Image (cartoon, rainbow, N blue to C red; front, side, top):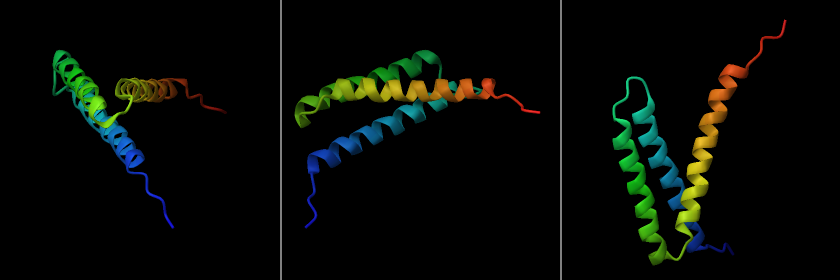
Length: 92
């Protein structure tokens, strides 16, 4: 017997889609040459945050906590990738 937890599937799917949408928006705005001005990116990110905040009451999840965790994870990953590019040492 396989036990399916629909709430967990919904929560994981929401996280995954939030990360995907945030990454696509940030990539479009921050690549060279940028397709979006930074204020448009800020408005788009704020829209995602407000959407998660709105939905959290209907599906009974900690939406803003999820938002903060995922947004922090995206930023930390990008910073780590950027730092790794400059910290590589050639060993002779």
